[in-house]
Amino acid sequence: MQDAAAETIGTAELAGGLRETLLELRAAVTAEAAAAMAGWAAPAERGGTRAQLENLALYLAMRRHDLTGLQEDLAALGLSSLGRAEAHVLGTLDAVIAALGALAGQPQPARSLPRGGRRRTRMAAERDEIFGADPSGPQTRIMATLPSEAAEDPAVTGALVQAGASCLRINCAHDGPAAWRAMAAHGRKAAEAAGRDLRIAMDLAGPKVRTAEMRMPKSFLGREKDSHLKKLRKAGLDPRAQGPKLMPGDRLVLVRQLSEKPKLPEATLSHPELLLAARSGADIWFDDGKIAGRIADCDADHALVELRGLPAEGVRLKPGKGVNLPGAPLDIPALDAADLAALDTAVEIADVIGFSFVQTPQDIRDLRGSIAGKLPEGRPAPALILKIETGRAVANLPRLIAEALGGGPVSVMIARGDLAVEIGLARLAEIQEEILWLCEAAGVPVIWATQVLESLAKEGHATRAEATDAAMAQRAECVMLNKGPHAAEAVGFLRQILGQMDRHYAKKFPRLGPLNAWHAPQEA
Image (cartoon, rainbow, N blue to C red; front, side, top):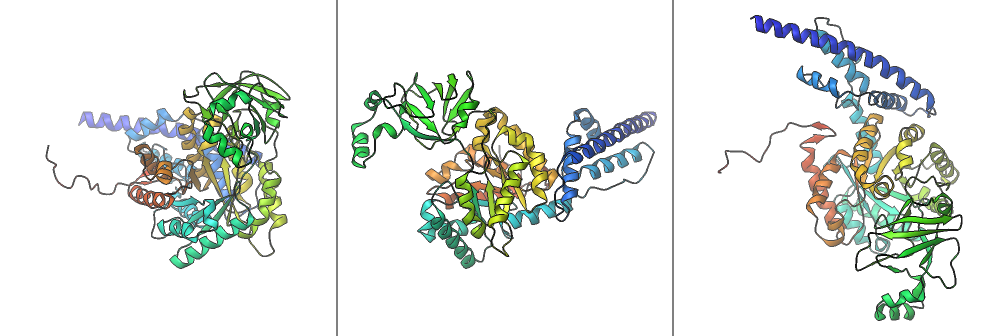
């Protein structure tokens, strides 16, 4: 009995100390959150958006404190360790403080109670408004990217809708208005025939820096197969302008204007502003991170790049491939002429507009202003997808959400392709988790994107790592698949995986349903 009494006293003392610590934490968090809210632009009120932003501010404030020590003590008392507080920060803190008070012999009611279930219901409604409803499907929606042939062949969109896609994505970097209209029409017709809800998303290409014109020395033609050269010449194309085959030890020059007789391969850029941001010693990447280099020398008109890690058989760099200079501040407008032209069609046929390379609240204001000026009378403004593709966008994400949230439905895409190049592959896994948590706190749906089941969509078979990645994507509200000849099969496979994972997880919350792998003792 003495041991039990001592244990009871120890528990009460521990609970009392933790309660005081959490009361101090609550006071600090509410003060820090109020300061953050004061610094954000006040959005237009849209059905509770202020409450969403207040919870986001509270979550950010709480996560500035190291809670790891507290968590172990709370778990030892059988209480919430605050690890699932995203949906309602203040209510979770208050519930734990009240429970600690009861254990410490100081009972008092919680000032507020967690309303995570209500918040998740709201986010589910937002998810369905942006990505389409799918009552018989998994909790996570599937967005499928349309290939160019979808404009001519209705069977392409039909197969994707039948397989389970509730949102079809049109990439405005390809094709044109006539093709986009045909794709959308085929998709809507297929959805009507199947009795399914469908959304059309259109991605603005954004100010992605790409290789533009290219020219290589005549000596580089010796690396090409005769059949390849004959094919180009037969098509009336200059072989020196179709992209160089780069080998280990090669160098490349980025220039404002091509030389008539270059000594090294040269390339101009879609946005020459990158040359102004270049610095000697900086890393640079081409073709979505497939080709690495380091700037050896540069000025306002050129950058000499020493290429690194090229395979022994070489690799081809073509015009139109992405160029990333991680960490460099590029003074490029978020909307270029091509984006503004694409908006003319998007405001008429799209339910959702993807905003590529958004980085600042002003970018969102510019897009919303352009949409308002083009929107047909009586048509609601499309929802927005904020595509997070740079380190600057990650750093500004709370401010981006604060700016966008009041103006209409908004979601966030973890665009893992460019983002991985910009922040480094080693940081990607950590950052995508943090974006998921932050967006849950804000009540904003998330899209898990880039190379999901890529091998299956393109080659007809998935890797084990891709299957695991697809399962992890269940924590997002939507998963985006890229195009490929087996895209419909990829949609069906993804739908199956997502449905299986719904049995086990709701965001970070494990569901303790029955396990079916061990119905009876197994033989050794």
